[in-house]
Image 1 (cartoon, rainbow, N blue to C red):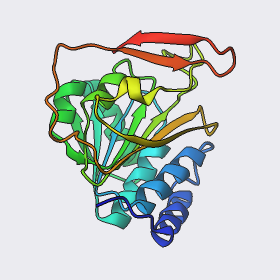
Image 2 (cartoon, helix red, strand yellow):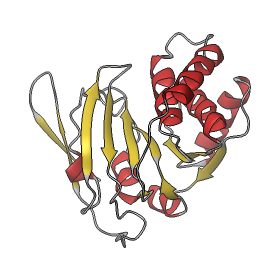
Image 3 (cartoon, rainbow, N blue to C red):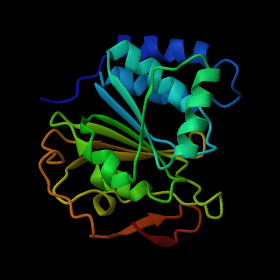
Image 4 (tube, one colour):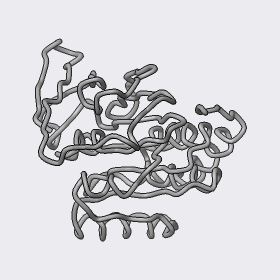
Amino acid sequence: MKLVWSPETASKAYIDTVKSCENFKESSVAELLSAMAAGWNAKLIVEAWSCGGPIPTSIGLAVAARHTCARHVCVVPDERSRLAYVKGMYESGISATEVIVREAEEAMAELVGVDFLVVDCKRKDFGRVLRFAKFSNKGAVLVCKNACQRSCGSSNISGLRWNVVLERGLRVVRSVFLPVGQGLDMAHVGSNVRGENLKKSPTRSRWIKHIDQRSGEEHLFRG
């Protein structure tokens, strides 16, 4: 099996997201990701949200989930984040999104068969979310938003090296960086992924490498 693109579903999700996010100034990321998740007919949409972050992307993913009859799950690290997320979604008229409060490794262990994953690079554990994700055997689309900034904007970072961040054995079919919003690093993981079967060590750490597209410098972070 592999991901199959549906332009009609993508278009419907895009239009509905535009309507749902009309009160937000910055909604381009939400509209793009909503269309992508719906177009790829995602069935398990997971987002790792950063407390204090904008809510439009979450709205877009919820819209996409409605169009594909998908499970939409938000992973947050603590109760404070959960309350902020639920409040933001409720004020936007959306209250059905499932929220999991766990550390990255524990949260992703509960979510088997992820085929659309959105991670906020502002999260300190964003690398661990990616590494411990258990992807669908038909392939998956991975998105890191706010790729040009990290730790409250202290550095401009982009150019994620997926082969360093992801578990060994995963096949990255293609990847791209888009200058949308604060930057989107995106990758398509192929249908021969082994994420559901790999045993992941809870104590194993790995260096995450990014490349600053402006200066060409490499930046290392321990995940």
